[in-house]
Length: 198
Image (tube, rainbow, N blue to C red):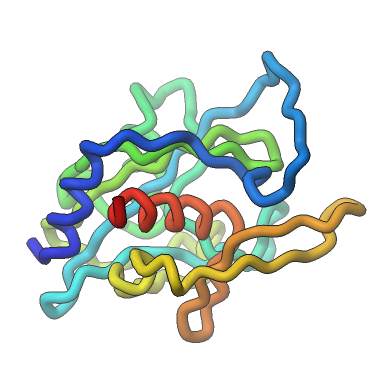
């Protein structure tokens, strides 16, 4: 296991708060008692040539929600899922062909609320078995990996903005080569970087 992965495991013991798509857009007052749909994503660490990488996907361009965006494998938690971990592992198997038996779950990161009404539980895991990426074309256009060191460096993150539903919204981005990693994915990764840096 690489030193970067060991740092992440140590960081899981540190307390961290939740995040949201509203973090960079004050003042926003969220209504108490709002109903959020539970979802899970798999933050999967993959050792490639002795270097720790993070597995990400480019969502299929025909999808109704977030087409073409960079995302973790994951999705809505179903009633049949025992917990967020089960949902994240199921989705990863469906989307990228990662078998649950090839994965060791390390723990949960802080939850993230999206502007679209989801409460995401990021599940940190380490791929320690055979993994040959296989994209489900119904959901995933591309599977790629980014060096973990890149996303753990807070200086790699920028704050950008765009119009969304008539409002100007700011968000984190952490570009990697041709991939524009932004929004909820970048915010979750930024929280991870901050947690490791504590």
